[in-house]
Length: 582
Image 1 (cartoon, rainbow, N blue to C red):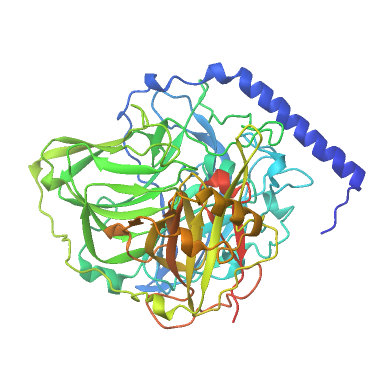
Image 2 (image 1 turned 180 degrees about the vertical axis):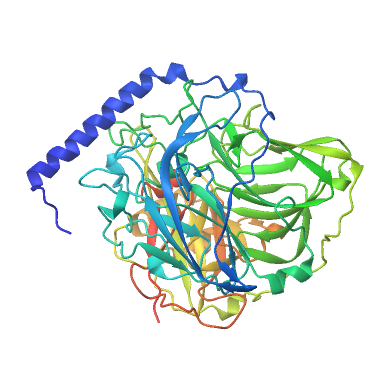
């Protein structure tokens, strides 16, 4: 759709936007002394909510049929803590009165289609500051652009939630790659855990921060029931975890001044909050029985990594990673989750040596070289155990689900994917690129449907970047440290040419190798790319549970994408298009 504004008028509009952003930044600095003193919030006083559950199917006389859901995005109030004023949020729900943060848990069934019309009921202006200099989706006539991505879903391109497929309230304005009002989720992939969240260009970090996240569980009863894992709403629960900061009036706090304000008035490289939220409550508590529970843990933070552990040494038994089961359970004392990663775990509280246990965190922020955790962000939630023993018919089987093994020798080609961070004269980050290219540069990754590829991901930055690939699933093969000797020479060559072969990658990728953690050796859609390392992954562009072809045309527009899932990085160009071909 062509602009109705002349170039001169459009320039004036953009100048006005920048001015308003600057004014908001100035006002934001004046309000910094109004931050809520997080130490005054008592922990473990709110019960853990179980979010509303929506069936992604209909049942007629025991036969499951496709269904259509209407889910809206609403501006509403939400209580994150007993002693914190209600917070203005953007929330998903079937109505304004039923909207929650996080949104309802959608439960789908393998082989039964789910159709969802996501409706934007948001106001004309945002509740958080945004930066017009990072090329965000911008509606010419007002309104907040949104688009929903089902993270981990394998479905048609038009339903993938492309960043340019955004729309405003009532579909009044739409992005250049928007095509349809109702999205189609085929639910033909392996059973497992997904989550949905906003994905609008340049606005993902603030739309998610405002509250637009929710869980999506795909079940396959014939495959999962024989495993005899904990089931039922009480014993099988998603835990959506993220961090936030608040002002004294309860509003979400986000710094309104950028680290390079003369370049980006508002953008900062990472957002961190000291209040840890689980299922919409700050440091909640959950009364549990002395038996096994299943927790589907989703890190929905913008930038915070969590290294989870139990305060009394209780074990996690990991049965799935991201959207797929492991081949066998893995027992571990800790789990490191980057933003958007999912850990599917069993916790056996009958083995707890104490009556209470805290789920805790000790991941530095930014990860891995940032500040150590403090009292507030090191605590996640508390479990309070009943004293009497409990009958428990669930088990932890010796084997789970075997999928395609993933053989590097079957890869049809090798790609080099390089991560760059660029800084200002004051050594502050200005933007981040993949392969030295902005998002809107012509597509360079064109895998063929049904093939596997080796991606050598070269992280030339100081941060750990969680790489997320839409459509494709991958296995992590190994991580190799780049030799310190000559590293700056290699970085200089890569920055100039972005050609790993020309810059002699084999000469530098010869350092210490880091083994892949046992519970992360299954098929994933996100993984942590260590700084100063080359991470080899085997990417598969077909199902892992069957040899059947996709039931949709994956070559259609608008295609797919891959990106860093630190949302502040993704919004500032650390994202690239992915075009699948026949």
